[in-house]
Amino acid sequence: MDKRDEPIESLSQTGRIVHPTAETKAAAHIKDYEVEYRRSIADPEAFWDKIAKELEWFSPWTKVLEWNYPWAKWFVGATCNISYNCLDRHVKTWRRNKVAVIWVGEQGEERVFTYGELLRQVNRCANALKALGLKKGDRVTIYLPKIPEQIVAMLACARIGVIHSVVYSGFSAPALESRIQDAESRVVITADCGYDRGKRIALKTVVDQAVSNCGTVETVVVVRREKPGVPLTASKEVDWDDWLAGERAQCEAEPLDAETPLYILYTSGTTGKPKGVVHVHGGYMVGTYITTKYVFDLKEEDVYFCVADPGWVTGHSYIVYGPLLNGATILTAEGKPDYPNPGRWWHLIERYGVSIFYTTPTAVRLLMKYGEEWPKKYDLSTLRVLGTVGEPINPEAWEWYHRVTGGDKPIMDTWWQTETGMILVTPLPSVPLKPGSATRPFLGIEADVVDRAGNSLPANAGGFAVIKKPWPAMMRTIYKDPDRYQVYWNTIPNCYTAGDVCRKDEQGYLWFMGRADDVIKVAGNRIGTAEVESALVSHQAVAEAAVIGKPHKTVGESIKAFVILKQGYQSSHELLHALKDHVLKELGKIAVPHEIDVVTSLPKTRSGKIMRRVLKAQELGQDPGDISTIEE
Image (spheres, rainbow, N blue to C red):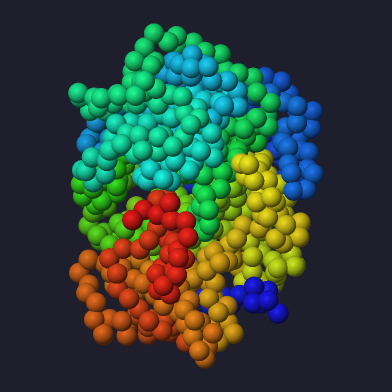
């Protein structure tokens, strides 16, 4: 038997249930999940048809879904434009003077855009792109720090059918170069610099190096944040303000077929060569719109704060497109959560009256390290709904996050991927929560836990997380590599295979256990990394943990753990022994790490996911492969 076909052990026990308050349940858009979910699964096309009609289309669809496995088309024959739905739809109403975006820089600067002003800026940028000769289907690479021009450029591209490729501004020149070359971008939009923990990061220097090897690039637009601005030396370079000067503030949104590509987002996540995930206007618009509305119970008066960067899919879907489609007020902030001190985000929540806060388990664990005194300094009473994204949140971090924000706010532990475009497994605010579980599938989504042959597994048996039916925001292909796209649908018969291992408990709640590639086989037992890491982090001394499997002569693989300690704790023989005893108590003998190293940092993608394969490669003296997405 292939070891990948063997069952995956689930060692952790289901914890307590946290019920929503009566106030939360009464206010929720979806009050009875069970009823609504059954209805949506009985006729998913009718469900998505009804949701899509909440948005505006230039012409209607003749068919909701055309499914030629594994290729999908949604809202067939319809024309639309996601930028129109994010902006014009609201500007035609009282929302034209509602605040759309509040931006706070690392140095404390503030810029505020109403929906009307954001539309005017987007129109000027769209006209400037057209003046360069760009047309539908051309590609633009956006390599900007987290500043408002990033959002403006994305929406401007979408407005005229140009495909944007946002590249996170922490990438190196070779990583940027490879993404520009693959997309064959005609224009690069960048800035002179970004700021990180008080340090100036020279971005234009990176772009200069990357573009020197990219023959398709005709124009480089530079947002100059510093005065005097950095010199523009090449003939192809132009200042952002000069570029927009004189451009009209009116630009009609292009009616586009629903399947028109919206963006390419390059991701390598935790494995392999970067792949260009392609999302389109119509289905992506519908999926991000409704998940933002229902998962975060978004209301007109909310102030919504997602800490992601638009350089990642969370920023695309849940800073830019999803919230703006709903007419929300978005707070976005440059900088790290612990700079200039660990109160940065709590201060912003108090200052702007944030009611919805969406962050990562990695960030929660970082803030845990500094203790509860920091959140206690601030008034967090405006918070109403919390969220996490990126990887499973261990119960200890969940409980801390819940406690320091008031103890009564529901936490939406969302599971989804760059490839899925939208949240697929998640609580809703009206649903009872189990700390550490992503809960149940979103409406219209049929998720399951199966073996490699695609057979559903019984309760609490570890297997592979799959989605059994197409959904609107699913990626349409991998750019220039359709064969790589088909792997997602052909690994397990008739399913989208997410690459994560998971178990489903007796109530149908899903517990993600880590990446399938990270499963460790100890003495014939296959163990997910997330459970061992969660057990370690539940010890009072541990802020963060990562575990890998190492070859072992007698048991196949042994577990090695890397841990970051909280402030006030130091490594000692006694502490390491106590950590092993703690895992023994939590999970049993089979999951106890053979070795534990205390470290000061872990290799992560810039979206916060731990790159265990890098740890393993370092440990075994192997080539770690593509590490272009690594933070440090």
